[in-house]
Length: 423
Image (cartoon, rainbow, N blue to C red):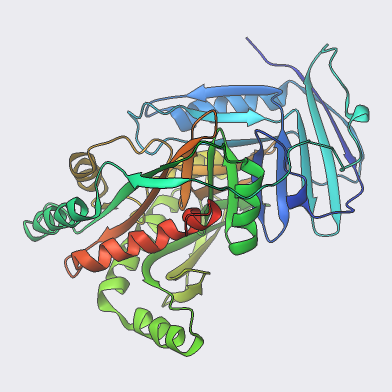
């Protein structure tokens, strides 16, 4: 059945930071204090299986075709907008989802908009009943207290053995690179407030994309694809080293990372997979000869931005951002090389469903433009917010050392541990 929406968009006051306007059950995509904060659901759809990206694009095209948009002509956010996240594997039990918020605050440089969406004929509150960008959500952003951590599917000692098995598979020629992830379980008697976790992530990792969709909360440094105005960008991260907190020591470690043949090889696999994934859609692809080093609060990564023009490819030039995300997923940065063999090895060695960890997460507007990150440095929270499953992974290549790979996952888990008061 078709979904018909009435959408209103208007510019509103912005007297406080957007991260102070986070509701219960939030839909969030924020970076450097700007982005999207939504609440409520005007429309929602779930998708499964290998066709989930195509199904999502088809559903969204139908939704926007049946929207009546009114409001402030100065709004440049191209409403309506949806937020979504997708499972890592085709066969995952986790549902992929797109959600149109009932209300959405959109922060752009110097402007803030409120977009409301209601099914046609709905008798609920209109946008006029929502305060101009200053809604009272009644949920203070309290820090998480009293939570404890327990081992996940693999404890640290078991994880070292898993890495040994991966290295054996590499030496036997099964794969060149495989990206393995481990989980930990956390929880407590008192529920975590999503707003508190989100604010902690935004404050500690302002250069990451902080997201919250259906209980999946995290701060990813990796942009799978951005497609806006015909320009397509993908940020590739692979190759990681932990920060010491001492400036001179970290500069030395950054230099070592930039010269590490092991990390450069791991990084190049990921860059190549993105280039090959984008070629059918874009022209004039460009990327630097060597990666830069991205400095985050707890770790440093080798980083490469790949850029292309989404024109001149016939019907492919009309690809919406969710289709680009599906074409790129999973990259070698979260799966491995060759992709099919690496995915099979991941299933064998990890022994559990990743859910939406390491899947695409982001947003899309009515023109199909959008940003999709990779759901990293994240936790999947239970509906009552009293527990969560945290994930972190790393790329394994022939030169990897098990102890160093374990340490890398510990460093990456630090983002969510800190946000939950565990670090």
